[in-house]
Each structure stands twice: as structure tokens, then as C-alpha cells.
Length: 435
Image (cartoon, rainbow, N blue to C red; front, top):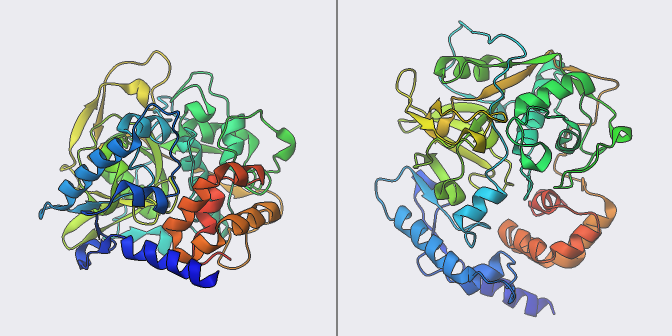
């Protein structure tokens, strides 16, 4: 049996695309000879005979785009095959890039910072400030994840303790959105400011107390045992490069919104992104810093599509500087952060509109005794039934690498969910550091 397993793993490895040894694009692979049958195996895709869509044709079309982009010697980033490669771009937009629009009402006046910002900032390098990458799954809850992550970082900086893992599900279930800003709420979208406003009254509990379900549920007030609270929030001036850079340098990670529905986001693998993302703002993320790579300036953005996407869950977006950032018009503001009835086109600046909608919570403090810090390498952070189910279904695949492991778990999704697992659980469990 062990020899049979070894043969399977070796067969998978031999069929895998070759790694391109280009130091400028660490992790880039040659997908030229990659086939749909291997993709189905690698990513645990199931072929539904009742589905009218031919996934293989979608895959081949997307793969051609990936290979064409990667063949460009002038590229600043590379595309890759991932779990979205057999999705149409419309499916990708609906499943991953929807759920935020800007809240036009300010809770507090914007704050300007006059001190000079350093040449580079990366809050991931400050121990305990940034928790591990999360996975929102098919729920349009990016706004809740962006707000939760920014609350985690603010609490860590306020208390000088390792950030706890807080609950986006509490926000999804409980945050009211009467003006329908960014959507109708829950998995149908809202804004980070809606979340911060709600949290200033309710406080935020931990993920352990109120687990993520990838659905909009009824607010479970008995689960809300707040460990963090804020007094309000600051919304930074729109399209102001200096204000955003100073804020992330001197305040900490910032909740931002971007246009992420383009196919280039769908296939982003690494490098300094400079694609044609446009200005249809539709996704909430977190800015954790900025820097420069061989003369290419960039923003460091944390996404919520799991650690298997992009650069371990992050994307570096091209940064041009004060007075040099590109601008465009968002002609569909209802796709992003606008409130109900607000259809007037909005000017957005920065690539993908990255400068247009930025905010952070104020007066963040610990409530009650210190919460447990976020999970570190070592004992499993998953419920016992979930861990047992993942081990029973995919322990062999875990040894073959994170991508194959995640594909296996996706293929066993029904059984894992019945054991209390969620996509974010197996996304984390497949990491080599988690046992």
C-alpha cells in the first residue's frame, strides 16, 4: 500500500509543471503542457455530468491567457493556475469579487499625519500584528474580513500582545446596514465602515466563540463575548496618496477597497501586479505595507481568498507615488461601496482604485481578560471532529503538498462540512506547519 501511494505521489509530481528558476518571479511555473485531466486531479475538481458548462473549455481558454501573459518578457508579475482556472470571469466576480461599496458618511473627521513616512513598511514583519491569511469562500463577506483583520491588528498594536483571531461571522450575521451601503449586508455585501460602526457598540468576539460558516445567519447574541472594542473609525480622504501611506506607516494596517474582478486578479500568482484591473470597485482587503523591488514600487495587500492564491494570500500592487497615481471613473458604483440610490460615477485613483476607500478603527481596546492569541505552528486549531475528518480523507495528499492537499479537501467538501469543517479550516490544515 505504501509503495502504491508513493507511486501515485511520484506520478503527480512528474506531471506537475516545471518551476521556472527566475529570481525575479519566485514560484512561477511553466504551464505550457499542463492538461485539464491533471488539473482535475491536482485541485480535486469533480466533473458534474448534469452541468451544462464544459469546464474543460473554460480551463483551456484561461490557460491560454495565463501562458500568453507569462510569455511576455516585459511582464512585472506572473499568472498561475489555481482553483479559479475553470471558472468564467463572471463566476469569479460573483463568487469572490463582490461585497463592498464606500460609505459616504464619516464617523470622524479625516486625520492628516505630517511626519515623514519611512521608505518601506511591512507589518507582517512585526511579531503578532498580522494574523494568518483567511478564506471567505463563496460568501460576499470581504468587507467583514477586511474590518476584522484591521481590528485584530489595531488590538495587537494597542495592547502590545499577539493579535487574536477575531470573528468575521459575527459581523456578517449581526451588523445592520439600513442604508444598504455596499449591498444588503451579510454575504450580499456591505462596507468596512458599516462594520466599524456596528463594532463601536457591540464589540467583537473571537473566531473560536463565533465560527465562520460562509453564509448569512441569524445574529447569535449569546455567542458574542467581546474581547475587543472601538470608539469609532476614521475614513481617510479619498484618492489621497500621502494620507494612506502615512496612515499605514504610523497607525498600522488599513482597511481598503479595490477593483478585483478582472481575470488578471483571478490568475495572479506573484510579482508586482500592473494589470488592467480597471476601476469597478468590488472587493475589500487590507493594506499591510508598501515597499520597492528592483525599482518597482508596490503596495502590500492582504486578500481573503486563502493562502493558496497569489503570494501566499497576498498581492503586491504597483505604486506610483504622490501626484503620479493613475485615476479612472467607477461607472458602476453600486457594484462596490455606494449606498442604495447612489448611482453617480465616482473618480477613483491608484491602480485598481486602491486609494479611493480607506478606513481604520479608532480607540481600539481590549475587553475583559486577554483573548488567546492566533494559532501558531503546533497543535491543531480545528475542532476534533473536523481534524479527524481531514486526516481520514486527505492525510496522504497533505504529504504531497499544499495545493494537492487543498484539492483533495475540496473534493471531499460534503463530508468535511458534515464534520464541522469549512474551507478556511482545510486551507490552514494543508499548510506544512500545521499538524
